[in-house]
Amino acid sequence: MLHVPLFDLRALVEAGQVLAYVVVTLIIFAECGLLIGFFLPGDSLLFTAGFLASQHIPNTDTPFFNIWLLSALCGIAAAVGPAVGYWFGKAVGPRLFTREDSRFFKRRHLQTAHEFYERHGGKALLLARFMPIVRTFAPIVAGMAAMDYARFLIYTLIGAVIWAVGVLWAGYFLGSTIPDVDKYLLPIVAVIVIVSILPSVIHLWRERQKSDSDALPEYRANADQADPQVVLRDR
Image (tube, helix red, strand yellow):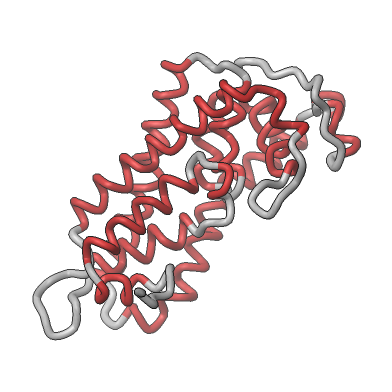
């Protein structure tokens, strides 16, 4: 049995480079559209993987990751994951609002994503890329609302490049240009996550300042109670 901490990328690479590629790809895929993926660390994982791609495995000339292969795998995962979430949402529909909470599903997360989608429409798929949890549920809500699939794909592909590939390369360039940056990796990752979320938070704050409270879905008054009659519209 392989005893490797799941998110210790250095240990994963040392256990096997193929294993590391598979784990990173599957985590990004799951976080971008599967209900059980909302707790996964997408932002920090991408940045750290990009950083390690700029570093060599000790006593070798081999990088921990090939940045081009990693970009392709994560970009595809960040596009396919939401597509799976979309079709799941379209198949299940509003019934998902009546599902009981469990360890891997929290109804309030779905309701938050629904409010976000109702307020921002298609561009919610781009903004949500930089918002943990909402990132997972936004494609599902888009499917529940029967958003035009061509529009959905456009937003999804753009988001995959901006978020997955962009954060990877941010880590790669930082690791390539700053000597001994690994000593400060944890605080840098924390700052990157905060900075990546900040534009969406500012946008939401401005929208909230402009919006009227009546624009919120009726279930906002009691977020802990499911409303099976909630109306989902393509925005």
